[in-house]
Image (cartoon, rainbow, N blue to C red):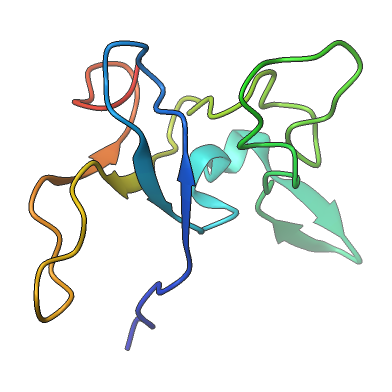
Length: 110
């Protein structure tokens, strides 16, 4: 059984021509590909984004993911994705317009 993601964060979208987006808070998804993972105590662990991942602008010297693979805010790298919605929830919690952002040809992404 896959748990439902319920934490949402309102932030600037990846594309400048879009309305603000409510992103699902799923820390490993934008960099989840094995090539960005690292080993901890002999176990392969997925990279994950830092608290600065949703910053409005990039800043020098900021680490956007644990391994440094993500180099700017809201970047979705090869093999990853980011889920969100540009629409407010309707009665019952459903979100019209929900989409997964995954490079390179996603609706909300690059």
